[in-house]
Length: 169
Image (cartoon, rainbow, N blue to C red; front, side):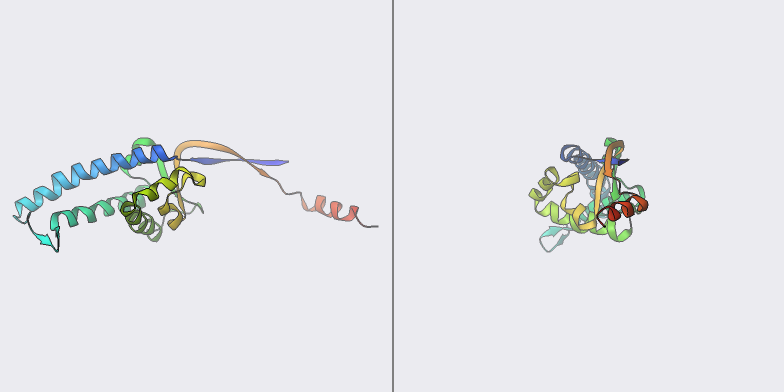
């Protein structure tokens, strides 16, 4: 006899890429072009440098990661994931903690952005997990789509005793 359960369906590589692209375009358009650039121009500091980087780019980069951390912690999803009906969950089923979100969205995403090929592991891993999902023990699922999972049911205690007694004389 098998136990039948339903599990949220894992989101694949392409839909996750689409959601990430939407997030990146939104962040670039809203934060970089509208907020950061205009703020830095108004303060007349748009040409300031921090080593070889413009301060504007450093602030925009920090806001990029803050967006992913805050949205994932508060909503379990970014705007791109909301549009495509995706959500970040923990493998344990517990709510996302700050530590989990920071590891996933800041450290893991930083590594993945620096080595873009790492995003490709999403296409070939079980449950389509990216590097940042492995680091944080999370996965991305479809919000309203479930898969049927059949698990073998263990025999009841009485049945086990009967099976053990059959081999004895």
